[in-house]
Image (cartoon, rainbow, N blue to C red):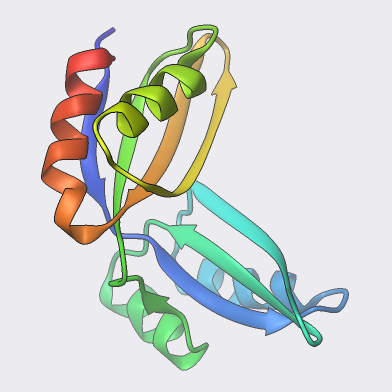
Length: 138
């Protein structure tokens, strides 16, 4: 299987940093029909947590997201990559981006059953170049 690299919309929201807060938000999105493949959450200080999710598709899902204050990220661009898992893949990606002067705003990935899925965020001005680099090294 070859790697697939594509632009991806990633969404961001804030939640109270307390038990059940994120679960309540995700439950409302699920009830609206969301089928998330990516969730990343962490404390943001002062009793708040930030979370990133993708994808959000469909009118009902987008309406629910807006009602929860979840917004599409426009301050940087994200690329989604999926393909066969290999040792050292994260290092290879990070080194390739750095050697070409591209700053990584965010990187997450996982490997399951010999497959990997990842998201990389870069400055908007660098997204086309980052996509070419990923396609060339993967």
